[in-house]
Length: 593
Image (cartoon, rainbow, N blue to C red; front, side, top):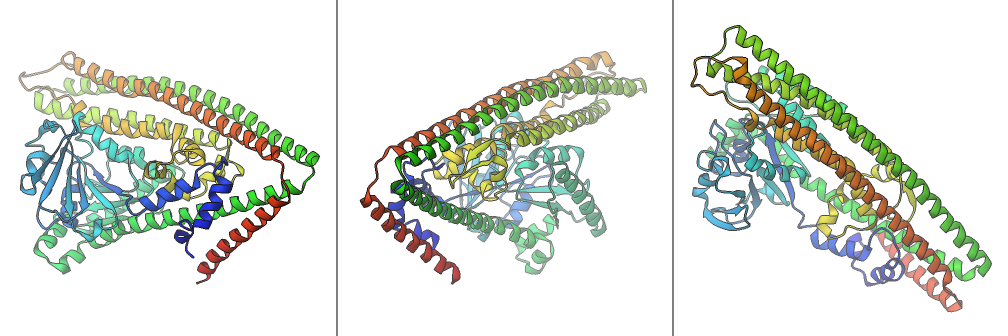
């Protein structure tokens, strides 16, 4: 008997209904298993392709999926809206989804009018996304590849949509360049995303005019930068950057040159993409098996508890009841203290970050003024040159600010998770453990996404979702870091200096500098204050969930000990125990095979 057989077995479901239905075991197991079966093979794995403008994202996707140059690949910024590529037979049509909820089917030949920035500048057509279908084996196992607008050239119009994809990350492909290798802007973006990048493929694009030595040197540099980011997040992740000549991959794909295709580096990346689905489904199945074993153990414990209650004297039962309720009250009292301390810590630290961020912005804007004054005093005053210099110096200021703010946020995320890990919650198996115990279980990272998929969001899943693996307070801060990375990297904040005057003074530039300072304060300080409130609300929500769970536990214990049991109950429990052991033996027999 397999695990999948077991959860559809009438005997197992009868025992679940009888012994765990009324229990506050953290989840309704029957509903959990039912939705798991229904959704396991429907779960889509969204894999966005991320990277700076011009890194070769669209060409990369063309080289994997297309028989023609379907996705636009001009040198200038092209992709202005997300393009999802899903597995399907109807490869000649594209579905245009608009922000107002309407949809339109078009022929693939007209795709450029909607996705290309030259035709749909700043997404004036109000497209939310475009869906294409493709028969590539890469997509067969529920993989959805997404071509996103380039980081660093995001307009306000498409920024929100791009963020939505990033927030749904199960995995991602990050395109980086050989020349230049990872820049500070890219590093800050990757640093903000890192907590979500549990399964990321790094692809370094090598154009034909870049030598093998150039590519190897850049790979070494890029892997070093990525390792330093990993280390900063207290991880020891093995970093591998795949070198791919995307131009050769596209050429080989369209000309059906098998040898060239195999030698350009793209095949290894395709294998890694396929493995995302295999590993994800494997881990989901392992999680299901773990939950089945825990359900079996819970049923067994529950039967033994009832058998004990039938044999004990009333006085002994009363003592046991009081001890159990006393234990829960003590845990609840300790949790309240820890949560109060956690709220106070988060509030104090957020205020410190806000105060420090104000200073960081002020200092860097003042340095920007001094640098521009120095440049103008050297005689560089014409519009075009000054515009380029202004962009370069403002980029430097913004990267300095991002460096320091992201470090502060990362530190708070790490410390906040540490504070929360001492709080005690009830697990699937009915035992009480610190949150740190559950966060060590790899299965939790998959269950983080299951409530949405499976339609369940109560008990231990709901609690862990509110606190662990970047849910709850920590998740709010991680999301803020990503949001800041998008908004601060975006090209739209680089005000251009008009070229209708022969010369400029620092006084002429002051309004632009002030606008930049005000923008940064609005994006960073205002968002920090809002996220501070969200963090506090999330901690209060955790407190309420825990109090509700423990109160229900005490009510259940009261009811257990109120019932009068007789010899008929003993026979009933013995029979159920035999059925349960038969199911367990059936599973173990399958394991041995």
